[in-house]
Image (cartoon, rainbow, N blue to C red; front, side):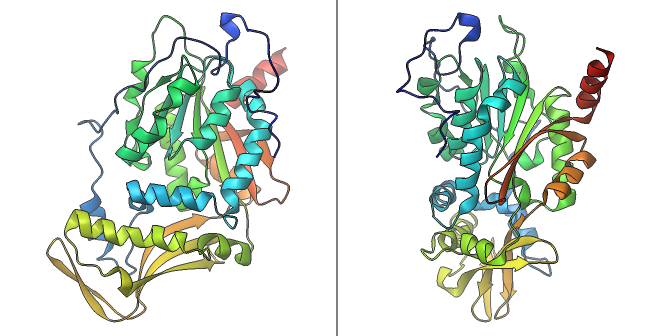
Length: 369
């Protein structure tokens, strides 16, 4: 792998002046700040509501957000390490090569906001490349997994404020937490929204546009948005990635039923459903389903739900966007392209976006000069 943008322990470097320090330099260490939990302005998402509503639909469906309880998050981390799961591996290679250029675009004292942060593994590549990043705000719905994932960051990146936010980022309208880091002794730099892992593919195109619009409104017009997006269209490659031989993805999907049983008093039998990955060529997406093996009745929160043999619960989409299609989607959400990288297999892309307003202003400034 190309490690050009990662911190190297084998190559000693001369100490930088304080104004040029990067996140890995020796500075007073912080500890992670207390988890910022739902408030009246941002109420807790309702697992019960989404499950009960989803099971009444003609095509039963539950939002993919709910796959990520603590156990689900652990299983997903296992998935990202599988040989067949190319998105995580290819995206990491791209970030190793381009993190320094992203950091140059971000400038010093950046504030990094990550949507659906998970383990924050890829974030470390970006933080290591940035010039004196001021704060990191990871947003994740799994409280315990979030706390575990950020616990060691302050020791790895001295001087970095870490403000973990327990929330469903898909429903965020604003980020009042940014006020906690604004107005300090040192002026903060550019806000950088980090959205890796092709998570953008979990949303329909219209949903993705709405999400990117809300993100832009929450972080302001001068922000950068770094998005990882899967571009693969080969069904053989896709189905191998989403239905691995080791059964880790199946366990990840079936864990949703265990969660419903545990938290909503349901009586799903895990052996009565099987994981199935499908490639929907018309919609250009991979779908994950939990398929009923026979006719059965399941009770959730005291309400019965009927399943026919072969009927499924649709648990996740993963849209695969060509470069042009993603650029068009981003433009409709008010974002313009600044930088783009792809892997050598043309399976994955990392896009760096800025608000269309900021991009137009930058172009006018160049023309005036």
